[in-house]
Amino acid sequence: MSFPRYPTYKPSGVEWLGEVPEHWEAIEARREIAFLTSGSRGWAEFYSDEGPIFLRIGNLTRDSIRLNLEDIQRVTPPAGVEGDRTEVHEGDVLFSITAYLGSVAVVPGGLERAYVSQHVCLARLANGNLMPDWLAYSVLSASGKAYLEAESYGGTKVQLALDDVKSFPLSLPPIEEQRSLITFLNRETAKIDALIAEQQRLIELLQEKRQAVISHAVTKGLNPHAPMKDSGVEWLGEVPEHWEVKPVKRLIRSIGQGWSPQCENYSVDGGEGWGVLKVGCVNGGAFRSTENKSLPVELDPKPELAIFKDDLLVSRANTRELVGSAAVALQDYPNLLLCDKLYRLRVDCKGAHPQFLSFFLGSREARSQIELEASGASDSMLNISQSAILELPCPAPPADEQVVIVETTNRQQSHLVNLADEAVKVIKLLQERRSALISAAVTGQIDVRGLVLEAEAA
Image (cartoon, rainbow, N blue to C red):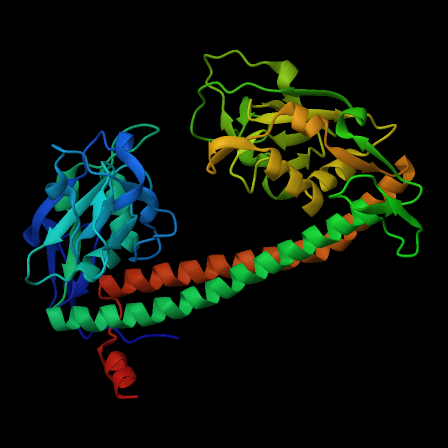
């Protein structure tokens, strides 16, 4: 859908904004900010299961002006800490000032008592010409994010000064026009978000289908008429009569883990330079060589940790849903090194196929045991021990049957993977559409006043 433009424009005088409608202003946020602060250090030791909410960067997003309260931390505010200064009020605009610049949220009415962390900036507006939602949408715009990223400083951990927040450039329509534009953006972004949610649900269903296909193939085989027997393992149930069940340790030649030096925050390209794998390179059951960090030139590489074809990699430490994720390298990567959050299993090809074992580790049955065995103080980082992997009972069909199971399962998965890839593309296009719409609205490139009136009349 195309939208009308305003009749006349003028130069804003601000590099980031370009031209704006003739009757709009171009200002710095400081003109309308009555109070600006960031949180205090030292609150982590007061984390608790009860008490007020402690808002962190993860509670802000780069695609919405709403707070994300799915994962909240609570605190017991200690005496003497500047609680009053960092307590949020309805209508406060929260900015990220360290990582994920451009993340923003407006504090809604009815939110229980909450404070901001040291990495979050709180802007409280004067009761005047600027609406909190307009400032937040301006932060989400392409020009807003470009300004914040340009003004940031630091190396691997970027930061933003509070004065840079004060200097944030924004175009300012009359207050009633802000209301109309905010109404339009709320309505249109909600439609886009609903479409994105549909695609995300489709991806989840496809993933469930993929896992069901894999689980059945590696625990029941491909022949629905094969005689079955009790596996002797309660959670595994019956397996084909001619299959064996062996602990993983009897199907491999070796297991080891790697090295995690301090690396650069970018990946190596192809065969240029040395890279150390990230733990996420095995997420989803497919090995992704691009998930690596560059080894600094002053550090000597360890070629014995290089990745080679048929290496089975298993994540040693990750979230509960991802710990124990497994994938097979399908070619040599002599410049990529194993990190210490990954196990490398070298499979005994006489008794097991690397991909079959990888499929089994990703099956529902194996996942239930891996998640049960994983340990750690927090669900955000759990560990699975070598012994838990090595002792895990695994179905062991004859080697030639494993090859057929792998080939058949790969073919069956191909269609599901393609459908999921298409859904990912649709999500990306919808996200781009939402970003473009916000950017056009807050810089005055579209005139939606009539559209809002028509929608309200209907």
